[in-house]
Length: 330
Ligand code: 8YV
Image (cartoon, rainbow, N blue to C red):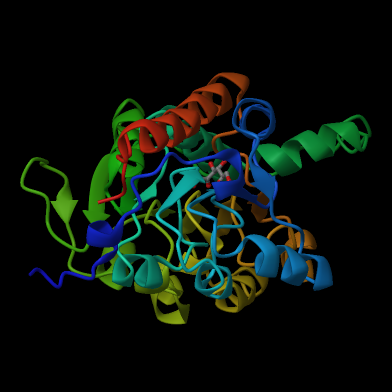
């Protein structure tokens, strides 16, 4: 007799009822409404005694968790859900989830790739232009009356024709690169492995990439494998004339080293849509004018969020109906 005890071998084939689905943290309103009205799913209370009571009542029967990329299913929560079978993540990034534990327990995760690629790449381009051309501080200059008082705005840096290094040439990195080609930029990249299907110049490390380019754009996935990939050493390779743009995850940069580099003009400037401890932004960054700060809005358009919500719900329906996810992470 077979003694296969893996999660897939044990997978429960009975229908998944609403009380076997849990929403973890706030999610997109369309997803939240469908979860409650169409599926009758449970909602995990915020950490504390209410959550503890909820988990002792429902922890054993929960089979599917639906979360956002911001909150995820962390190590402790996953341990409290011993019969969890699938994690449905709204967002392309799923680094807030304990991926190692999910892999160990053979729990598949789905995310929402492709549908947000254009909007996130557009955000990178917006930050790129704002940062090099100082459009953020230029706008403040008009609004606060300085221009009206007769002063001229200082000259900025040309954005066209630069050598740009993309850290992480995945779907979003490639969409950023093709947009920058239209600006006459020369594209370089660093990835865990060299790509065979691109003519862009490959560099073996983030520091080498930074050394060879004028602007470093971070598009690498978050998680333990990329934590602080851009550290003080890489920032010193970016150099006093160089810029850093981050639309990926705050964890990819050593934020304290970045603040220090900006405060001391070790780099020329930065454009950031993501931070290490969102929504908190280091006071040092708020006080600087050579940095553009956005509130993690990369995918934040009506159209893209609607597509992300539809894909999230498609994954949930597919798992309930067939036990498979439409867009599982690799
Ligand atoms: C999402 C993001 O909106 O998809 C991602 O990884 O960073 C954002 O664009 C956010 O994660 C939703 O939770």
